Length: 385
Image (cartoon, rainbow, N blue to C red; front, side, top):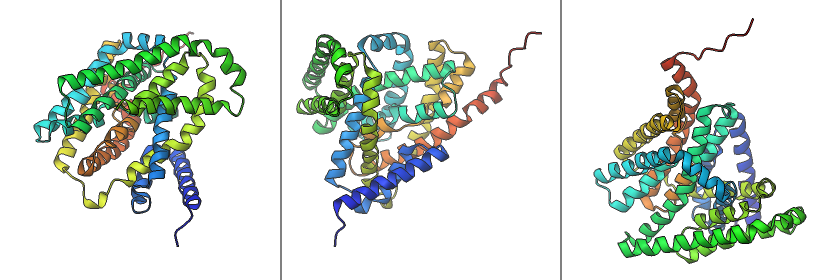
C-alpha cells in the first residue's frame, strides 16, 4: 500500500526543517544538506513530477525576489563600478574553465556547460557566511557583494544561451541573432512596463499589500513572465528576474520582499532536493581526473578574481586576498545550470558543487587567519591619551 501523497509531502517538509535547523546551528549551508537529502531519497522521489514543479516554482521565485533588488538605476550604477572585475571573473571562471574542459577532450557544449557550473559564486552561501561572521562592514565585503550582483545579472543570460545550445547542439550566427532578438524583446517589454506601469503603482501597492489576495498578483506576475520566457524558448529564470526588476520600479521593494520571501523559502529547498534525487552517486563519480582539475582551478580562478579584481576595485592587497579566499563556494546558480545536463555530466556537476560548497565554506572561515599569516595582524589604532 502506497503512502498518501500528503503524508509523504509532510515528511519531506519536516525533514527539510530539521536539516535547516541543524545547518543553522552548525553553520552549514542549507543547500549542501538539502542536496544530500535528495541523494538519500533518490529511490523514493527521483523523477517525481510534482516535486519537479514545486522546485521550478522555487527557482522562479528566487530570481523574482532577486530581481526586485535591482531597480534600473541601481543596475547601471553597479555596472559602472564593478565591470572590470566582473569581466575578469567571467573570463577566468567561465572562459578558462571551458577551455580546460575542451582541452581535456569533452565536446564544446559540455565544456561550456561545465564552465557555466563553475562560473558563479553562491550568493546565498556567501551572504549567510558574511552575516554569521559579522564581516558585512568590511570593504572587501562590499566588493564581494558587488561582484555577486554582477554575476546575478550575467548568470540568467548565460543560462539562456546554454539552454539554446543544449537543445540545438550549437548556435549558428543566425540562431544566436534570433536568440539575442528574443532576449532583447523580453528586456524591452520589462523596461517599458517597469517605467510606465509599475512605477505608477506605488500607491496601489501600499493600499492593498496587506490584503490576502495581493500575493496572488505577485506570484502570478513572476510565473507569467517566466512562462512567457519559456514560450519564447528562453529560460524561465530570466523572465522571473526581469519580472522582479519591473516590480522594483514600484519603490516598495522592502514590503514586497517581506511578503514573497516566506513563499520562496517554502518552495526553493524542494528544487535542491529534486536535483539531488537525480544524482545516482552509486554509479561512481565520473571523470575523476577532470573533476580534480576543474575543482582546483575553480579555487584558483576565484582567488585570482579577488586578487586582481579587488585591486581594480580599489582594495588593498590584504583585502583582495581575503576576498578571493572567501569567494570560492558555488551553489544555486551552478545547480540550475547543472540541471540542464544529463547522465554522467549531471553527476559530475553535482559532485563538483558539493565539494565546492563545503571547501568554500572552510576557506571563507580560514580567510582572515590566512591573510593575517601572510600580511601580519592588522594593528589597532592607538587610543588618544
